[in-house]
Length: 210
Length: 194
Image 1 (tube, one colour):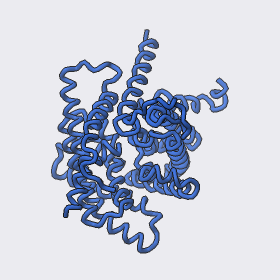
Image 2 (cartoon, one colour):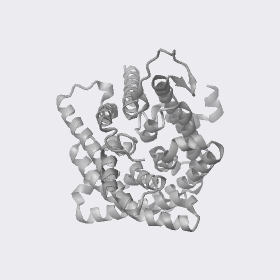
Image 3 (cartoon, rainbow over the protein chains, first blue to last red):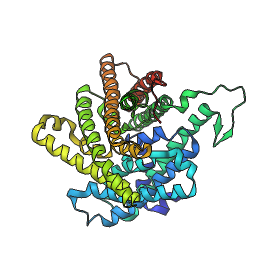
Image 4 (tube, rainbow over the protein chains, first blue to last red):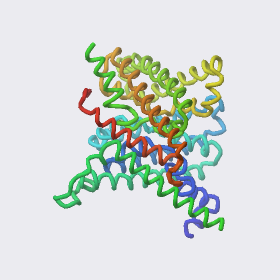
């Protein structure tokens, strides 16, 4: 409950909403593309999660500061331009500091622009709320997204390559599940993850009713 | 000519943009519940993807010429947003019933990753203008094929109706798409593009 004192009542509610009740991938079904495509190796997942979280926070600051100045009719294009500028920064940073990850991510860095989480939060939250709450919302959504991405990538890398962050963790006799490194593995894993999370949340809501 | 046919077939089957590159999943999940909306949406996507690729290619050349490639993301996304607006206006005028069934999803083509991805792949793979058009059209047709298959299976599955409770909705679409992707792996090695 330290967190609740630290953030204030409304801030705590915002964080809890972003992290569990309205989890961007499981509950809202947003940002699935990159969750599927980038999760074959843990290091890629970490880079992608960090990139998306950074863009989310920066966009939250920008949009919630400018929200009274943005004309309603052209707001979507305004979001796009703001998001695209930050994505260019991420791309330049990756190119400069770790060219190997930048190459592995390929076009998916540019595709952060069309990650629905950022657009969705901008439209649903950043436009209506003050900077402080928007940043809290951005951080909790970004963290929820990154954690999911990393969790899926851990399973996929261990089963598909027999490694974890490039270090071999499985015995030599282990037969690699090649399908886990490819598209079908991603679909199956995410499907199962959604199944589990939905069952848990349904059970919880039934318990609270009873 | 053979090169163009290779690109076209690869974009539809072996390098399907939805089932191999895992792009365009948000509308995939939300629209693949009925065949009719999936069909209408895919036509809009085919039109927008081909149109934006046709506009983005010369503009990218222009940016390279002026040595300002760095802003290409911004330029691409603005062009995509503008074309979507155009399609929306045309639809509102001529196909109001189709428009009513899309609801919120038409503006969301802007955030459909496939549209931007085609422009980014075109830059990354250094296609010529004709090859870009063929690749864009092929990718869009491939996306349509994928979403139609999943939507049809999903509709039939609803009639039988014994999907586990927690798996209904997004979960089962993921599983269906996984099985279809597994089937599409069988096309691998038929044609190859870099």
